[in-house]
Length: 134
Image (cartoon, rainbow, N blue to C red; front, top):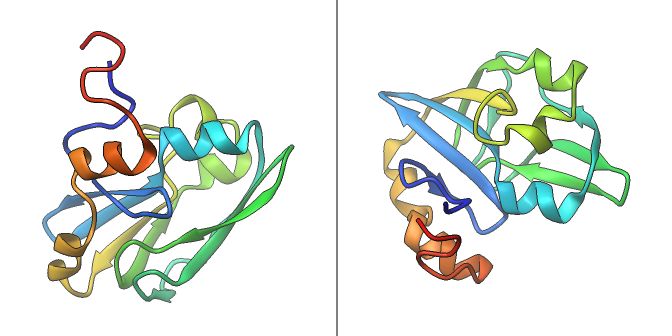
């Protein structure tokens, strides 16, 4: 099975976006959490904060390093995932599920087209198509 779901868009900085109408759920990819190692702390902006595409929106810290999380799209934060703040390990165990970071009301749906497709993201991280026997 691929570690890159086909229903998402991706940034080169290893964030994913799941758009549902004008609401985008954002998290970091399986690849990113693997590179980080065990996540021990997540800092996310408050609801109502405006974020700009490709600007820093938070920090994720692991036993190895601290890394900025970048906004793959612009918009206003509707919700931040309190679960991931309380249990940062969700970023490792469920990066595309309960390990999501924030939900944003999209300011410009056209920004989604500027992100990588699943195929392009697989190429970006060097994952070969069909890896793992899917």
